[in-house]
Structures are given as structure tokens and as C-alpha cells.
Amino acid sequence: MASSLALGALAIILWFLVHRYRNFARNLAAAKSSGLPVVLMPLNVYSVFWLATYNVWLPLLRKLPSSCHGIWLQLLDPEWAYREGFSPFAKVGSDVLIAVSPSSIHAFVADAEVITQITTRRNDFPKPLQMYTRLNIYGKNVVSTEGLDWRMHRKLTAPSFSDKNNEVVFLESLHHAQALLRLWTGSGGGGDQTINDPATDTMRFALYVISRAGFGVRVAWPHEEEDQQAGMDDAEDSMLVGSKIPPGHKMNYREALSILLENIMWTQVGPPEYLSRSPFKIHREVGTALIEWGKYMNELYSAKEAEIATGQNSGGMDLFGALIRGSGILDDPESGRKTELEKSDLMGNAFVIMLAGHETTANALHFSLVFLAQNLDSQKRLQDDLDRTIQGKPIEKWTFEEEFPRLFNGMAAAVMNETLRMLQPIINIPKSTAPGRPQLVTMGGRTYVIPENTHIYLSCAVHRNPKYWPSPPDDDRYDGLKDVERFRPERWLVDTKAPAAAATEHTKFDDEDLRGPSGADTSAHLFKPVKGSYIPFSDGYRSCIGRRFAQVEILAVLAVIFQHYSVELAVDEFASDAEVEAMRKGGKERKAVWQKAADRADHLLRKTMGSIITLQLRGNTIPLRFVRRGEERFMFD
Ligand code: HEM
Ligand SMILES: *[C@@H]1O[C@H](CO)[C@@H](O)[C@H](O)[C@H]1NC(C)=O
Image (tube, rainbow, N blue to C red; front, side):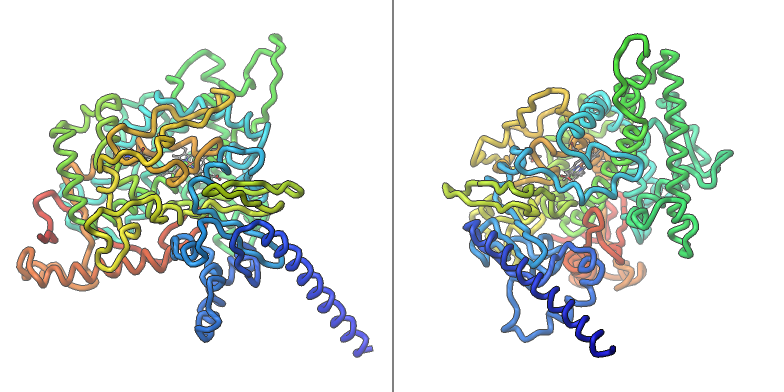
């Protein structure tokens, strides 16, 4: 009996091995026929098993004798595209490589020409929708669909991203940027206090901006609740929320949203009813947040519906209103127009826009601040540039028409661009080829085949491909770093003739209603990357519809902060305030203390970043201080 059980088990294991081997052989043959370099992988790096446990295995594998090391070991780190950058591509001698395991074929692309083919041939290279199901908690949406479904969602959402709405984004960003600055510098504005976890605050900032610009809800910051009425003069039509829990709710809006978005991975464990009964506290909290945010959205929906039905108009600048107006739900049944949309379509889009619209932008702001604290010359140049463009104008007088274009052509935009180059929030933009539909691509005059059923990743390594990012003639390496590995916003301001004028070409939408962001993304006098080589917002049809929204928001907040303040690395871990005070200004000792903080920040940026949806510091923070300009503690020649 026992022996037949053992035999049975053995047979199953054998069958499994043979099966895996045959799959491996098949995948390998397909990959080899592509003409691209192939790396053999023991398993699918993006499988749930590996994503959940690689932190256990990788350090062990790295202890193998170095003769066993190879590119495969580099590629086993799911974040390799960020951590290793272009190096694996350089090693295989190609800007596109294929990684094959028994259960997967992955193509990684760091070539601009191929990226452009993939982003423009949307029927040949669809998004792998199975990766997006977790975004469907409230309903299908513009991020998680393809084909006709996607066209419907894109048409529904595109009007909300007009420049009229971007003006609201600009003004709301100015409002919340000032609140953020008061949080960081204290009510007297003196600053010079250590902010231990700036990322949490930038996340709040972005959440509050999208809340108002998207949904007409102005959230009061916890530190400003008493003066909440003060800021309301320009926002009569928005709903104001603070920490009070309204009747019928168990959580305030602010809390529901933060808990939901910060823990989105738990929403995959099960439906809200299950989560609410889970033995784990965090599950129960997320379950409640999920239900609560849905309730708030429902209320908002009803309020908007009533408003629109009675012909009231809150300016047409809020996303939810625009969604409802565009949805046809309120159309007179008499008129015969079909209602194609479900309410879940609106909820689905509202949620995904909230999600897509806050974490990415918050990271870009957070890391801009860290990079500027590490690169004092660039920070100084940003401030000088702001002095020239803003000329001391008080923030209440800034307008979208006047100030935004200036910011967009100056150092603030260069800082934003460079931050997004170094730290593309979505490090691998997923695409695919369908079963039975291999695709040809050309690269450097040669044709290659991307096999059927391949997961394609547009890799952020393209941002560090030296072919597209020229280093200054006299300075190839600095502190032992290659130019492409350095934060150097100035690279965007050199008046280069673009290597390929193609960067100005816009996607030709067959239907203009799908376009979305208005406004050009380029300026005549600045560095224009080769088309396909700079893809923080992806590119082509499925590029980010919120690009302009994000740019407006980030530039507004950078301008508010750096008009009067500087950001510094906090050095509390290495020296007390009194100790720093005792060291000569600009002297060697101060520099040494600062350097320790800079090295620590550098280490964390290199080693402890991870993606859940976007790339962030995980388990660590880089503390910062904001000080009045002229009162910097760390300035060196
Ligand atoms: C720095 C900030 C941002 C970055 C780096 C960014 C990046 C991206 C990327 C890479 C994609 C393509 C994703 C994919 O292929 O799956 C995308 C799509 C999208 N983003 Fe953003 N995004 C940012 C800000 C925003 C904002 C502020 C909003 C909305 C308020 C937004 C809304 C969307 C939407 C709706 C899509 C889907 C578009 C479609 O497929 O038609 N994003 N974004
Ligand atoms: C930022 O990047 C875009 C390309 O996406 C470029 O056209 C623009 O000129 C850049 N801005 C600055 C200030 O360099």
C-alpha cells in the first residue's frame, strides 16, 4: 500500500518534470527563433510565488560560487530594471532581450525604436489584462480594459483632462502646497525641523489634490482643521471634509481613502464581506475602508446627479460630474439614446483615476526633494530660475496661463523630467503578444520576431541607455558614476538639436475624443529625447491620460516650496543640532556629516526600493528639513 502510494507520488513528480521540461523546450525554441539574445531562467520572476518569497532566496543564490553567477541571477530580482539599469542589456549586447522559463517568455525592451513600434501598434501588442484585474474592485475602467471596451472608457474620461480642469489642478496644488509647507516648516514658518517621513506627507498632498480636482471634495489637513474655512473662498462648490465622521459612516473620508490606497494589495484577498470578518486587523480595516469609500462615492454620485438633473453646474471641472454627464445615464429615455454604461463603470473609473493619479505624482515629488537635497548645485539653480520667472510675485497672484508655461520651460520642469528619468514610477510597462500571433519588429535595420504569448516589458532601463542620453563632452564620469546614472537636471536645459525630430510627433488618434491631455509636451529650446527613449508616462495610445495633470501639480508644488525655502538632508542620526552649530559653516566637518547623510540616502535609493504598484522606498525613510533660503545649514563651494 505504502509502496504504491510512493510510486504514485513518484509518477506525478516525473510527469511534472517531463511536462515542465517540454514546456521549457518549447518556449526556448520559440525564443531562439526570435533572433534576439535569450537568457535561461529557472522560473517566472513575476509569478506570485517568486514575488512573495524572492527576498528569502535571492541572498542565498548570490552566495553561489561566482562561476555560477550570470545574467540570470541579475534578472531574478524583480526590480532589476531599476537596480541594474542598462547593464544586463550591455552584457548581452542588445537593447532587447528575452528571458525564458518553463512557464513564461518575457521580452525586455530598452530600445526606443522597438518601444515606439509596440506603443503604436496597439492591436498587435495589447496590455496583458490579467495583470490588471486587481484594479477592478469597483468596476472595469480605462486602465484595465482593451479594444472597444477601452475606447468607451477613454471617451468617457478624456473630457475631464481638459486644460480647464488643469487650471483647477494648478490652483488646488498651490493651496495644498502651502498647507504642506506649513506642516513642514511649522506655523511660524521657521522650518529647520526634521521631517522623518516626507513620503507620507507627499502622498497626502497628492491625494488631496486629486480629491478636489477629480471629485470636488476638498480635504482639510489635520494640522489645519481649525482654519479650514479660511481657504474656502475659491471653492464654494466643493464639499469640505475633515476628521468628523458623518452620520451613517464608520470612517472619515480621508481615512477611508488612505487606508484603501495604502493597502490595495489586501483587497485581492477576497470580497469586502470576507475581509471584514478576517482574523487579521489590517484585513478588517481594509474591508471597512473599501465599503466606506464606496459609500462616499455613492453619496457624491447622488449629489452630482441631483445637481446635474436640476441644471446646476459646478463649472464642469470635476471628473465625477463630467463622467455622469458623459455617461448618458441621465439622458431622457424619451429621446431614445441608449444607456450603455453601468454605474460600476463610473465607480471603476473614479477609483482607478484616484489611484493612478496620486501615488505616481506623490513619488515624483518626494524623490525630486530627495534628489535636490543631495544635489545642492541643482537646487540653487532651480531657485535662481524661480527668482527670474516668478519675480517675487505672491502665490495668490499666480495664474495657470502665466506661471505654468514659464515653469514648464525652466529648471523646475528639468528637475521633474530628470526625477522621472532616474526613477520611473512604473519600472516595467507591461504589453504582450496574443496566443497564435507572433509579431515582427525592426531594430537597427534588422527584423526580429517576438514570439506568440510573450509578456513584454518596456523597461525603464531605456532611460539609462547611453545611446540616448549623451554625457557632456568633458565629463564622462563623476564620483565614479557614469553620467546616465547621475541626477543631472541640467541635461534637459542644453540647447541641443534633437537627434530625431520625431519627438514632437503626436500619436495620431483615429478619434480625437480619445486624446486626453491637451498641450504640447515639448518646448523648442530644450533637450528632446529620441521618441521612445523617455517613457515615464508610457507612450502612444495607452499613454498616461493624466500626464498634464501630473506635470501641472508637480511644477506648482516645486515652485511654492523653492520660492522661499531650501530642502536639506536631516543629519540627526550623525550629529545633534548643537554639534552642527559648533562646526564652521561650509567647513570640512560639516561637509563630512552631510556626506554621511548623503551616502545613507544613496544607499537606500539603490538597495531598498521596491514596487507594489509603483517604485518606492520600502521600510525606510530619508528624513529631510526645510529651511528658509539663506538659512541653510549645509552649503559648500
Ligand atoms: C508623475 C505622475 C504619473 C506617472 C509617472 C504616470 C504614469 C503612467 C503610465 C506609465 C501609464 C501607462 C500604464 C499602463 O500601460 O498600464 C499611465 C496610464 C494612466 N494614467 Fe498615469 N501617471 C502619472 C499621473 C497620473 C495622473 C495624475 C492621473 C489622473 C489624474 C493618471 C491617470 C492615468 C490613467 C487614467 C491611465 C490609463 C490611460 C489609458 O490606458 O488610456 N496618471 N500613467
Ligand atoms: C521634459 O521632457 C519632455 C519630453 O517628455 C521634453 O519635451 C521637455 O522639453 C522637457 N522639459 C524640459 C524643461 O527640459
